[in-house]
Length: 83
Length: 271
Ligand SMILES: [Zn+2]
Image: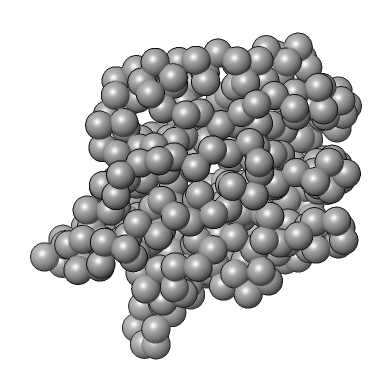
């Protein structure tokens, strides 16, 4: 029941986003990528979902322009503070 | 039920929280230094905070019969200003010998910037030079995996730092393996929205075993649940885990890590 409840909530969230206007959000693009991972099988879906949202680079960024994380990696452009 | 809250920011919590925690079986609480939710305007603010962590808060906890320990540092969220960080770092040695100070923490990274790495290295040097335990905060959300890797590399590059004396906190499914594989302790933080739910924490224990892992509420001034650890214990019991299995994660493991500091007194709590 708990998983069913959460799944319907996610479906409603996606419908809500579709009803909205404006430009696609990079976080939602990452979300859609993560949803695909759920169908791939295996025993490490949670890690795979977290990886989709993660910064894939390995070097420290030049400077921290904000304190907060936003949930998904905005790409190199976002890292430079443009986002 | 007995447990230890190895990561709670009690200066942000109420006396009701102390009552609830002790009533639920909490036998000791450990409080790492962290961000106040706003930037402190000078090193003096940190001096006062360190006094609060080492003098006032232990007295407040003692009124509820709860032993209180602390960890000192300038947190990564305020590490972008290296000048301020250097001033704060120079204050820490005078506090290290206070009776409730277990080590350096919660150090680490927030946005994985060069200055944050530099300040992390200085904290690691301080810990190495004084043979201190280390408690590490790993970054949030999209920054966690990269930040965890960078942190482990900094710790491993200092030959005085022994992994078994470092706890890497806030691990999730994509970071726990590298932490444990490289000999460090792993902390799982039970948060309502981010980090880790009770169900996921228990999943990780079932997958990776109960060695070198603890769980905490990291309760602070934000959305957090001071009773997250005992609530997770109830979930463990619902899944049918044995009392000893539960006790190892909730009590024996935090004791095993923290008693590496001679200042930590093992609670005599009944099982
Ligand atoms: Zn914390």
